[in-house]
Length: 257
Image 1 (cartoon, rainbow, N blue to C red):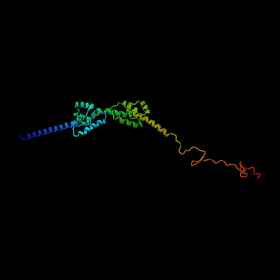
Image 2 (cartoon, rainbow, N blue to C red):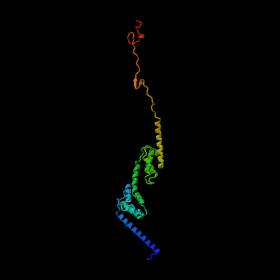
Image 3 (cartoon, one colour):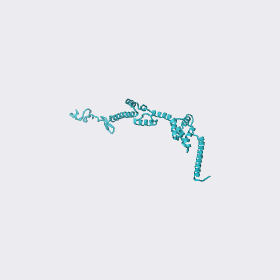
């Protein structure tokens, strides 16, 4: 065989291609062995979001170094029930060839996790009642509302849920205002609460209190909380005749003496 530069280059190219094919065959063989033995706790379509996440995390841990497509295949082989049916439909669309494993996980969560999450969130929204100031209730209500999927509630539904758990007095007065959206309902609730709060503070400010240091009148003289009665009138007694009823100056026996 001629060892001209062209032949050498061709030989090197052939050897590279053979090596590449051998590597690909080795990887495919290892992948088949791995996929045949790789097992995780089977996912059957549970709507508990924590179980879905644990299933995806477990596949990620055991599939270190493998491609997204390979990890998706591992996930599909460890599904059963309605989850397996969903995966087969997913596979028929050839989405597993273009999706990353993270995108596959999001599809799985949206398919099975959302229904559960919405039920839990609805229960949280129902339990969110006004216990103190309107401002605090507004913040808690908004935080829960933002956990729902976008555009899950219409504006009328948001207002209805908001009014439902206001205090009875505020709810009645805000309804009279007929708010068209949640923002208006929250604004009216704050204004009405402010009027009540302001009135209560005004009444407290001007409530009659006893004057400091004032004591009710008492005819008895008081010294250190000890009552002392007024001195009684002196008994009339004559020192001339020792008889009572008159003084010595008026003694009838004075002239006799």
